Length: 195
Image (cartoon, rainbow, N blue to C red):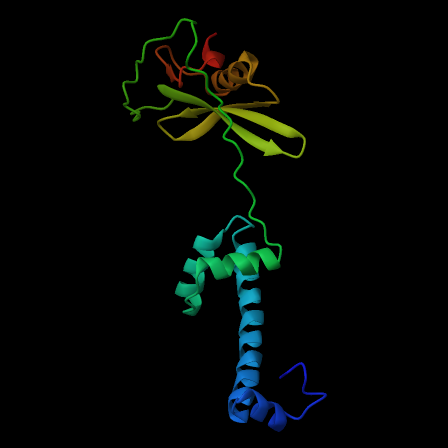
């Protein structure tokens, strides 16, 4: 009826198709309401998607629509809207292992025995490596933390995870803090820590 209303009157089409005119006008009105709702939904879904740094899929968006706005909508509908708006979820980056504890090098005994508390400064240090993704590639940060103050007392950064990365961090800690004899240095037993 909507397509042919330029050629025929609504009254004639209603009689021929045996549809009440009021039903047709109600349908037209509801179509406008649905269009407005869809446009509002597009905006809300886009807003939530961007808020989630392009990592939210249908589940978190559905949850936020319900909790925040009281809108109950199926994940399928959200998926269709996302597809139509070309909202593509960023995939998770592959986890990059920084520790290789499976090696044949000599391993120092575990003197800390999970006692991560220190009663005096510079008596127990822990070391670890973390990785940082940059536009140029991966950077590796080795840190040495004093378990007494929980402060980083030495660090080193490099574009590889070879032994100098951790030895420079430990050297910085030793030069700046000058700990007494008996210092315990605990690490995750990665091959980089075998000096």
